[in-house]
Image (cartoon, rainbow over all chains, first blue to last red; front, side):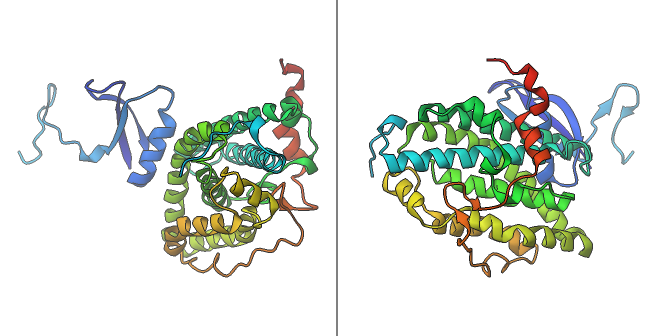
Length: 68
Length: 268
């Protein structure tokens, strides 16, 4: 499963997308994110499965609502 | 309880020897563990697992250097410690003498050896010996991600298939007795550490903490009684080096650990 990785340098700064990784579960996704993106000092870091993203719209394709 | 802060020069002779030996055991075990992780940077089952091995190897080597540097206070030639010793002078956990032959073996040492180091370091968290106490927190912070890596892979092995579960069983059972014995007997060295409030537990206490710590993982893999059925034997055990006498890492391992091929690049 693909996980997207987000982090920020300091409290209050917006979360920034810093990359993605492959992991079979949430537990390993945490570890792999920590190991892969540890070259900078982050304030916090988050991962989420890519499939949990819900598209709102896309300028080229239009409305992302899968029901329509 | 309040304890007087202690620097190395303030230790009495028994405690001084015991602290020196413990630091060397920790440093050598981390050096060898780091090398075992490094051997899987290429060839791990997933690209990300290889990156995790690289990261854990760097952590372990960093910890080993930091610990070895503490030996300066004991009038020890740290350069000789890092680059000049023969195989039979090493004090690493005996389980790390040989490279694990498969990924199940690497995960077994990730959980067992890294986990045993964590239990030993936690016993120093409130140490009266200031140089150790000041460094233990950083080491434990980094080790928490090693534990998470080991646990996640352990659970995968335990649940993926009968074959993977059997591979994990073999890897754990063949190392269990050596890892338990590593905490040592409740002998003179352990007593000296306890009396000076340098560590808060001797071998038997640390063994119990270790088994308690990995109990959920053992249960998840159907290995619940592997460790409880072992009575550690210390008849040929060297308490100072925390390993059985007469065994040593192989020459190829030690040549790499010492950095023999890079000796020309060593700088002061």
